[in-house]
Image (tube, rainbow, N blue to C red):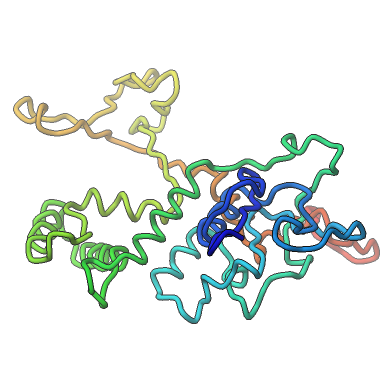
Amino acid sequence: MSGDKIRCPCSKCKNLKFKDPHEVGYDLYAVGFVPNYYNWTSHGEPLDPSVIPQTVGSSRYVPPEMSGWGDRAEMRWEQEMVYDAYGVPMSQFNPSQPSNDPSEASTSYQPDADENPSFYQPYVDEGLAERFQDVLKAADQPVYADCEGYTQLSAVTEFMNIKAEYSLPETCMNRVLQSAGGMLPRDHTLPDSYYHMKQLMSKLGLPCVEIDACPEGCMLFWKEDETLEFCKFCGGNRYKNVPQSKKKLRQRSALSKLYYLPIAPRLQRMYASTATAKHMTWHVEHETNESMMAHPSD
């Protein structure tokens, strides 16, 4: 330790940097532990050659020594929302209920010392930790100094709920936000537009890709066809017809769209939690009784 800072055992810092416990928690969540670090000699443990490696290979695992900064009993609802959105099990951040059961940890393979650990490193979203910190900061930051009722995230959530409940247009929300911001102190953190609110809230959700499509369902305007304006099969228009006087004022809008939900980040979120990750390997690990009728997929 160096004052209030501790060595960061993540796979990027490798116990070479001293950081605050909060920062260490972020790094461990984003990139996981340094491989083969079973005997915590850099954190005060005596060298013990008899230590048997345990399967705690989840890049989301956080040791109890660093878990005192996230007790659910002391959390507000917006903080819980952030942890839930990023798939962080609360038991890993609750000092009274540390998750040390190997059966609840990930079954990720841990390479031996003589193997190349970089080959086995899991896929890491480089921007995940930054987005997580941004949203967690918004959940902790008050709208203005000494404000006890709302944080930036809770205020944005409230405005988004009002917009959805009363079907308010975007221009109306911009006007409301500008008026509300003018009534607050200059150092307030309330966004000044609906666009900036969506930017903040989008970090809590999963990505969705909009792809223009032919109104008749003939094709998608995607990849090599992304620049086409007419369908290759039926010749139909891709965009809505806009009066000549408004073409420069409005962005062109497609007649039909397909909403693609990427599978990779959704699987990552399921594997991020030990509560759901163990169910993802059921078809491989479950025992089959040959004398009992079962579904063919089992």
